[in-house]
Length: 430
Image 1 (cartoon, helix red, strand yellow):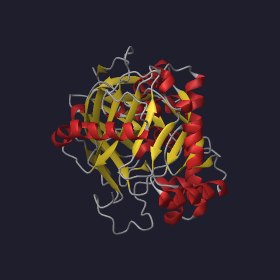
Image 2 (cartoon, rainbow, N blue to C red):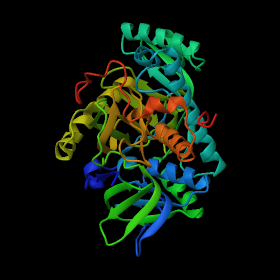
Image 3 (cartoon, rainbow, N blue to C red):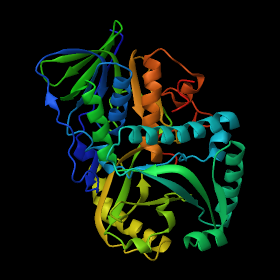
Image 4 (cartoon, rainbow, N blue to C red):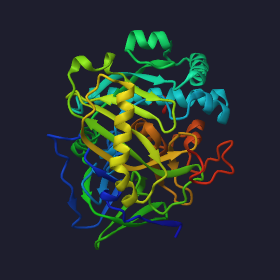
């Protein structure tokens, strides 16, 4: 046997709690248990947004696909997402240049921008009803020192050919009524309902012949050029390729040292008077740690989130929710005093991140024909689209040198001594 991996039995309740505003008025596709063993071209493990994007792309390439999920698809990590579809990465271009050099860092940012653009085109092509709206982003400085950093960041982005303008305090106050030292205003991002998006993509894949299966993968074997999934029943699934799209319910694979799991928190306010919302309903995020991020919804609520911490125990995380929600509410009030900050709902969830802000995409070491699609950080959905494109290319035998930038076994400069917990596409086939 070439290799095998055990799967984590965590339930969706362990991944998130509370109630997000997503998916209301819609239902996901029905998943049925297996009644026999199957063979398929590709097995996608996980039916959330990452698995849905992978299934859509692989079926578009003509592959037969089985998507398996042990619970109702999308109600794990996807339901906890705030679905800010940004191309700006958690690590600034300045930081990535320091880690990897300018050309590689600029390529990472350009591919992220291309991923948002590609996702927008996919949604438009299928007229997916997922409340998708193009948005600008406002990246705000916390203080004078941060303003200088943002000015240098914008200069570097200009060198990389990335769009955006630097706004000083007077510009922010005049144009957006925001009392901050500086910011970068950038086009090309978006927002969506992540559950409706995931379900819509799954329906497309199913219409092309993908099989949605309810079941738990207990163990995955890779042997003789095939991947075999042992389930919790008497049947197995044999595939040429398997894609791990399990979100933050991690199988027992060796994760790189630059990865860690933490918790994140969010609130949704009561509906606002639309006239009191900020200009253009831009996506807002800060350079602070922990940072605040803010967006709106079609029914005029404000979504605000952040306050990430190192909590990994679901019980402790859930116990923190009320206090964290109060902190986020206070930060929102200071950022936008016009808001009615009455909380309609609050939620929290397990959240994965990497020390360089980049995803983990590509072959799983020592498991031939098994690929990971983990879109970590604040760009989860953006990176999930990139993962689907990359893995589709890899399965077709296409490799690009830049694929290695996201590899699970990469050893980024400056991270050789990292220990978890220490730190606070269109171009695919070219």
